[in-house]
Length: 156
Image (cartoon, rainbow, N blue to C red):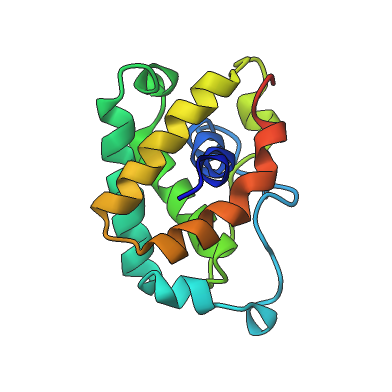
Protein backbone atom coordinates (compact mmCIF):
# COMPACT_ATOMS: atom_id res chain seq x y z
CA UNK A 1 0.00 0.00 0.00
CA UNK A 2 1.28 3.41 -0.83
CA UNK A 3 1.78 5.50 2.29
CA UNK A 4 0.56 8.63 0.47
CA UNK A 5 -2.78 6.97 -0.28
CA UNK A 6 -3.02 5.78 3.29
CA UNK A 7 -2.18 9.19 4.67
CA UNK A 8 -4.77 10.88 2.55
CA UNK A 9 -7.47 8.50 3.63
CA UNK A 10 -7.08 9.20 7.29
CA UNK A 11 -9.29 12.22 6.87
CA UNK A 12 -12.37 10.06 6.91
CA UNK A 13 -11.93 8.75 10.39
CA UNK A 14 -10.60 11.93 11.88
CA UNK A 15 -13.58 13.96 10.73
CA UNK A 16 -16.12 11.51 12.01
CA UNK A 17 -14.24 11.20 15.28
CA UNK A 18 -14.60 14.88 15.92
CA UNK A 19 -18.25 14.95 14.87
CA UNK A 20 -19.90 14.46 18.21
CA UNK A 21 -22.31 17.37 18.43
CA UNK A 22 -23.95 18.86 15.35
CA UNK A 23 -25.60 16.34 13.09
CA UNK A 24 -26.26 18.34 9.93
CA UNK A 25 -25.37 16.79 6.57
CA UNK A 26 -21.76 17.35 5.57
CA UNK A 27 -21.17 19.28 2.37
CA UNK A 28 -19.34 17.15 -0.16
CA UNK A 29 -17.42 14.98 2.32
CA UNK A 30 -19.13 11.82 1.17
CA UNK A 31 -20.74 10.95 -2.13
CA UNK A 32 -24.45 11.71 -2.02
CA UNK A 33 -25.76 10.57 -5.38
CA UNK A 34 -29.24 9.08 -5.44
CA UNK A 35 -29.15 5.43 -4.37
CA UNK A 36 -30.13 4.22 -7.84
CA UNK A 37 -27.22 6.09 -9.43
CA UNK A 38 -24.59 4.97 -6.92
CA UNK A 39 -21.94 2.47 -7.86
CA UNK A 40 -22.04 0.14 -4.88
CA UNK A 41 -19.29 -2.17 -6.13
CA UNK A 42 -16.83 -1.21 -3.38
CA UNK A 43 -19.57 -1.30 -0.73
CA UNK A 44 -20.47 -4.85 -1.74
CA UNK A 45 -16.82 -5.93 -2.09
CA UNK A 46 -16.18 -4.79 1.50
CA UNK A 47 -19.04 -6.98 2.69
CA UNK A 48 -21.85 -4.40 2.70
CA UNK A 49 -23.03 -3.13 6.09
CA UNK A 50 -21.49 -5.99 8.10
CA UNK A 51 -18.13 -5.53 6.37
CA UNK A 52 -18.15 -1.78 6.92
CA UNK A 53 -18.93 -2.29 10.61
CA UNK A 54 -16.06 -4.80 10.90
CA UNK A 55 -13.63 -2.28 9.41
CA UNK A 56 -14.88 0.56 11.62
CA UNK A 57 -14.69 -1.58 14.75
CA UNK A 58 -11.11 -2.58 13.91
CA UNK A 59 -10.25 1.09 13.32
CA UNK A 60 -11.68 2.11 16.68
CA UNK A 61 -9.54 -0.53 18.41
CA UNK A 62 -6.41 0.79 16.67
CA UNK A 63 -7.29 4.37 17.60
CA UNK A 64 -7.90 3.39 21.21
CA UNK A 65 -4.53 1.61 21.40
CA UNK A 66 -2.53 4.49 19.89
CA UNK A 67 -1.44 6.84 22.70
CA UNK A 68 -0.61 9.64 20.26
CA UNK A 69 -3.98 9.53 18.49
CA UNK A 70 -6.38 8.46 21.24
CA UNK A 71 -5.89 11.78 23.06
CA UNK A 72 -7.78 13.49 20.22
CA UNK A 73 -10.77 11.34 21.12
CA UNK A 74 -10.68 11.76 24.90
CA UNK A 75 -13.99 13.67 24.97
CA UNK A 76 -15.64 11.83 22.09
CA UNK A 77 -18.93 9.97 22.36
CA UNK A 78 -17.58 6.67 21.03
CA UNK A 79 -20.93 5.09 20.09
CA UNK A 80 -21.75 8.24 18.12
CA UNK A 81 -18.31 8.18 16.53
CA UNK A 82 -18.87 4.57 15.47
CA UNK A 83 -22.25 5.46 13.97
CA UNK A 84 -20.76 8.37 12.02
CA UNK A 85 -17.84 6.32 10.73
CA UNK A 86 -20.17 3.57 9.55
CA UNK A 87 -22.34 6.17 7.80
CA UNK A 88 -19.35 7.80 6.17
CA UNK A 89 -17.76 4.57 4.96
CA UNK A 90 -21.11 3.29 3.75
CA UNK A 91 -22.01 6.46 1.84
CA UNK A 92 -18.54 6.91 0.35
CA UNK A 93 -18.44 3.34 -0.97
CA UNK A 94 -21.81 3.58 -2.67
CA UNK A 95 -23.93 2.03 0.05
CA UNK A 96 -27.44 3.13 1.01
CA UNK A 97 -26.34 5.41 3.87
CA UNK A 98 -26.26 9.18 4.27
CA UNK A 99 -23.46 10.77 6.31
CA UNK A 100 -24.98 13.06 8.96
CA UNK A 101 -21.79 14.40 10.58
CA UNK A 102 -20.15 17.78 10.28
CA UNK A 103 -17.93 18.90 7.42
CA UNK A 104 -14.20 18.24 7.65
CA UNK A 105 -13.46 21.88 8.36
CA UNK A 106 -16.09 22.13 11.10
CA UNK A 107 -15.02 18.90 12.75
CA UNK A 108 -11.32 19.79 12.79
CA UNK A 109 -11.49 23.53 13.37
CA UNK A 110 -9.19 24.58 16.19
CA UNK A 111 -7.44 21.21 16.47
CA UNK A 112 -4.39 22.31 14.47
CA UNK A 113 -3.67 18.75 13.42
CA UNK A 114 -0.26 18.26 11.85
CA UNK A 115 0.89 16.11 8.98
CA UNK A 116 2.47 13.81 11.58
CA UNK A 117 -0.88 13.43 13.38
CA UNK A 118 -2.51 12.64 10.08
CA UNK A 119 0.18 10.12 9.13
CA UNK A 120 -0.10 8.32 12.48
CA UNK A 121 -3.85 8.11 12.15
CA UNK A 122 -3.58 6.65 8.67
CA UNK A 123 -1.13 4.06 9.92
CA UNK A 124 -3.77 3.05 12.48
CA UNK A 125 -6.35 2.87 9.72
CA UNK A 126 -4.14 0.64 7.56
CA UNK A 127 -3.53 -1.70 10.52
CA UNK A 128 -7.30 -1.84 10.99
CA UNK A 129 -7.81 -2.73 7.33
CA UNK A 130 -5.26 -5.51 7.70
CA UNK A 131 -6.89 -6.73 10.92
CA UNK A 132 -10.27 -6.78 9.19
CA UNK A 133 -8.71 -8.74 6.29
CA UNK A 134 -9.53 -6.09 3.69
CA UNK A 135 -7.64 -7.04 0.50
CA UNK A 136 -4.94 -4.55 -0.49
CA UNK A 137 -6.68 -3.57 -3.73
CA UNK A 138 -9.84 -2.69 -1.82
CA UNK A 139 -7.79 -0.79 0.76
CA UNK A 140 -6.31 1.33 -2.00
CA UNK A 141 -9.72 2.02 -3.52
CA UNK A 142 -11.14 3.02 -0.16
CA UNK A 143 -8.20 5.21 0.76
CA UNK A 144 -8.34 6.93 -2.62
CA UNK A 145 -11.94 7.97 -1.95
CA UNK A 146 -10.95 9.96 1.08
CA UNK A 147 -7.51 11.22 0.04
CA UNK A 148 -8.71 14.63 -1.14
CA UNK A 149 -9.95 15.41 2.39
CA UNK A 150 -6.42 15.77 3.80
CA UNK A 151 -6.24 19.48 3.02
CA UNK A 152 -9.52 19.99 4.90
CA UNK A 153 -8.08 18.42 8.08
CA UNK A 154 -4.40 19.30 8.54
CA UNK A 155 -3.89 22.78 9.97
CA UNK A 156 -7.54 23.48 10.75
